[in-house]
Length: 481
Image 1: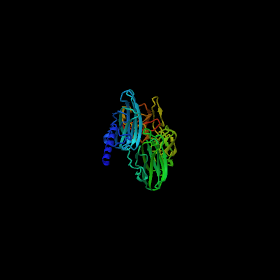
Image 2: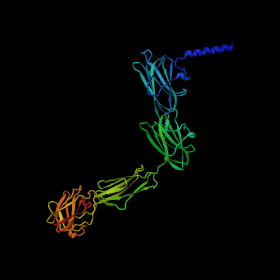
Image 3: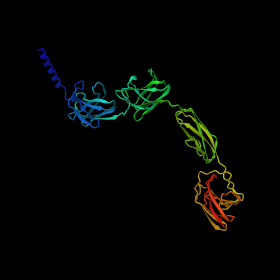
Image 4: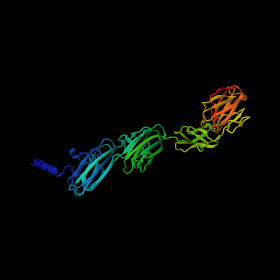
């Protein structure tokens, strides 16, 4: 009889408990114990409607994250079931077995003025439960939706202790993720020798600390970030002397902050300690160039790139390789600056001079009102090639009788003058038979009288404003009668 009585009593209690539990409720402890009690909430940013028909009712929604990232839940209280009173509700995000709560918010709303609130949490991959319930013996209607943003981190979990630190190769950047469940990460690397190591961290986590540790688990350096964000990431590095062998990097946020970061290590760069600029000559003529040489110390500096500048660009300019071009008379200081952040530089002073000009005067010259000069000799002891006038390629000559020649050419841009030579000698070497004419740059035609009959040779070239000469045209020949 006792055994029968006990079985009867157990059946009566089980039936009573079943009747007392509201539909969709998991009891006062809100523990998930059957798949039928949970509604799957799609992560599609689309509202799903629901209701709490009476006080004590609780609804459960499940969300599955296939990778770490940010889960955002939006909840809207729409009013009591009677359409008049306010619906006082709450929603809470918990792990699937509901042993941990990651966030809770109360929301009140009426049909005429719904109340809306949201939570966005950084979570690891896994299954989560969103609990919806009432406050203060309330009932009502609501809407709920979820969306997700992947963290796209590439750290290997678990890595929350020295013992399971994730290996990281030199210069290999790893993106980590601080979530509600993961508040510390460890990495390990092997230094090939005793060396200075640079550890660089870029954080989107608001307040973050990164530190280095040796194989004896003693801290060797650290840095603390403040007020970083995804829209305003912060970057910092520490240079530390590390022993050959295994060393560690530890990452941890402050005040349960969450977010992403990137970490990497490398051999610390060697800065430039000195720059010395030299040249075989200290002056250059206008239009000419000289090559400067820069010596960088130490010889094994990591970044040897230089920035070249001139303090007087109207006198001389310098290109990215240290080649100086003289532009006008004067002095310019050329500076070569290291760009590695060391602020070291070297300078040299370059003097720019005007070269000897072509002598366009003749021993028996005369110049008429048209700016035409003539003579029987021309001195060209020094000739500097021009960089702005080109060779004349369209010269024409016509004999017009009475020992006269009409010479035409196409106007040459940047020409200040033209030099015309007529000679009975094809190589223009016999000065006594050579006629030289100098005309203004506006002229493109001249008629000359040559004193000797027979075959003659003619050539023309342009001169710029500095007296520098262009190439001679091709030689034309004509017959003087």
